[in-house]
Image 1 (cartoon, rainbow, N blue to C red):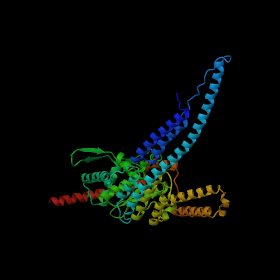
Image 2 (image 1 turned 90 degrees about the vertical axis):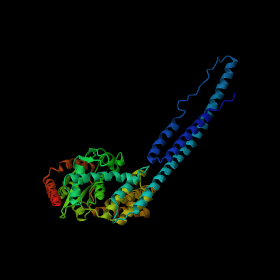
Image 3 (image 1 turned 60 degrees about the vertical axis):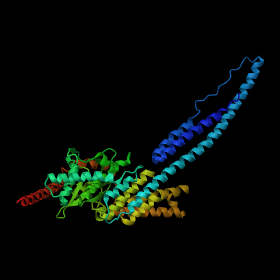
Length: 467
């Protein structure tokens, strides 16, 4: 009987498993799987390959009595079996080494294919984003494009916009119940803020059923998106009713856009909030994180916005249409970097585009600085990591380093000062008490007085119409 060598059996099993694995990867790719998921599915396969045949043990033939002729034959046979087994294992080890090399190469090719798919997807949404006019664009559309690019199966814009319109419809119902003019900017902003500060009754005009919609609230769990980047999305907020200081002000602006209300995004270090103006031009700061008005003095004292940043209008100022457009484009870039887990030439192209629109955009400057820093590190590693004092000996390295220093200086000139995570978390807690402060209370009293006056005006108009 012919016996198949052990190494051939094992090699066949290895290739069979690899074929099954590759088939699953192809199916995975057809359903637009993410690069991260693909990488996770690859790891177990590699581990299985490393441990195959680990439990196999060589079977030895028990020798007979050495004094008999048959024992001599048995010893010779046992010796030949051992030699053949050793040779088989050597052959198998050689084959395994080659297979490992091919497997790693194929793994890298699959990862690059996934990256290329995501890169193409983002390029498509980036192209659509550039079709928007920076001087007059839909904030709802811009946010949708920046977030939809992150998903493997994009959802339709009509679905995204529908949920925002429902919130806008709720604002109209609030104003109607409180006898307020839905064409007045102060009243409209007051109604939007009700979504962040109170539970509200909503009437479905189609079914005539009414139910309570809970107020929008701050999600303290993974607020920075370290574990789940989608936590920072407006999409997530529409789904769950909770968000953080990035998504909450953006949703406010989307609702304001549906209502034709005027409201503006304002930035602080690691934070954003909303500003709006009443009919007399008085500015109000609304903190979506706690659903209350806050004073400018409190923001200056509690955030890391220094005097240089205030002088340069880097922070605590309203963003123009162009600056808001640029800021939304940085969201697309951030989502791209998270999806592909790193910088590349395309991310650099997008960063340069932002700076061509708003040369003082702090987010883009920081991203460009990070990209340049990585470039310096890569060049230095190729040269054997020379000390800083010897950079001038290497023209390419020195040029890259000097460009990074210029970016560092440019960021400092904006007045940007990063807020440590511990300080930010402490600041978030203080936000819950901000409404108790005297200056914030006065702002809310002033707005309430304006709203009461608007109610009286609306009531007078109704009485005159009835005469």
